[in-house]
Length: 85
Image (spheres, rainbow, N blue to C red):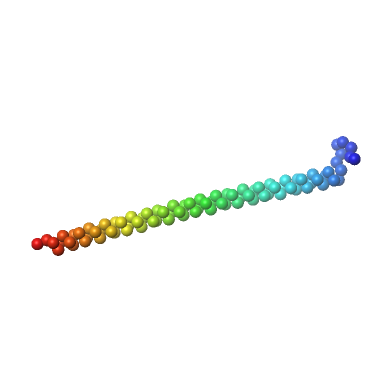
């Protein structure tokens, strides 16, 4: 058995392996954090696209309603003209 304060080759190997595992865990955590950041960016972009699509849909709906109102007014004017003596 090793005396106190001295390290055996086996103990040194365990320490080396533990340090290596810690480095690997740090790298994995950094990669995981990058992936989370990328997922957040993707979600933000998807949200922006949904908002844009909604704005576009509202625009076209508004334009369709304007056109329908113009057609209604024109038809009403034509009907009045035909009914005038």
